[in-house]
Image (cartoon, rainbow, N blue to C red; front, side, top):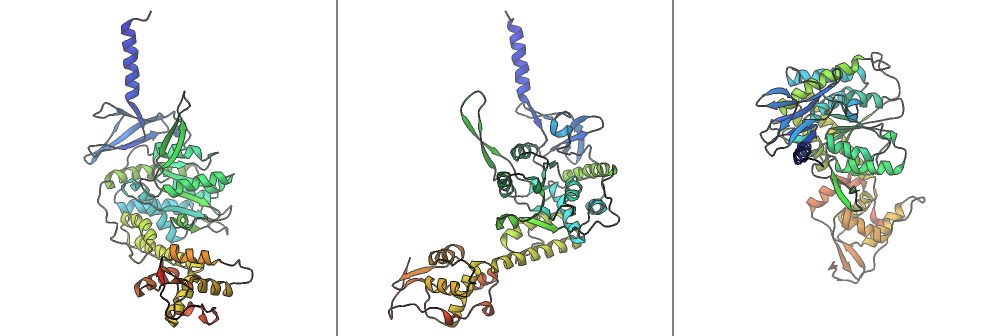
Length: 462
């Protein structure tokens, strides 16, 4: 029979293990920062702890509640196989600008990008190391055909980002939820690795929830040893680098990307065909310097509005603000502002080619030329009359939905049908700017079928 002292000893050991919390990084209550560091040569892990302006290496960190943070083991599969890459020790880097130049030189040495996107990618690397100080983040993407350099981009720029998670080799998307939740780093993903449409749908969920803090991905898991189901929230917020061949169907998701179109015309002559051995060593040295950059810049206040262009779409302003608040280089700021304006024009162009723009164009011309009330049916008839023979007719019900739900205009019920109420000039001007509508774009209403109305009929609001 087991002695009581042995039972107590085993219970104490069990409680001790329960208090151990394997951790990758943490912000402690006193403001100090813990970051896992990994020395691959010596096969060791530890914490670099930043406190009161200095750093030190520690093997664990005990919290006031009795828990003890310990780093992941160097034998952890994610660490041992390089799925996640870490700094090995903080290193001095000089000024922030000198560090940015070193990052850009590394990117230029191994990847063929436009000068503007080189600067954007450099700013994104710096942003990734302090991304958890922001509430919204953009994503960085390259798009092109096989052989255009997309993978080289991911390997080079991704290796410099904060705790990069190289997930492109995952057989399914399911592990990515868990790795992001554990590591809370930068997802580096090659979308072309998807084999099935449901995998792409799962990845879209991560992307749709991962650029704004507070939106987790929910999954239901079984409780071990029982038939109960336990809802679980997975943290997926953080910076992300993607390589894709095409576009995502969701226009809102597309607007979250800063994208470079990769050409297949061949590499610059000074770029190596294959990555040399020193690539990893150079990336490791830069990650070490970037870790010290994180320590020194994490708590610094940043003005999200200082360099922001207020004329941008709200979503674009939201995703560009963190980048503009991270860099202080005038040329990079100018590049980012130019890219933001180009993205804004592209979004407006996309909207101007949609059905909503056609509907608004017809309404704007009606209101400009006549005070006679026009019905939803008038708009639908003219819209279909002007459509190409190959296009599918748009129903009056659909046009009414677009007017009320997408254009946010009011319709009033009358005997002749639903009349579209003209908005005030400020609202019409805002809608016209959003959808790229001008008076010259609007079709002449002469061919519009006239609506049968009783003289003096008063429409009724609905």
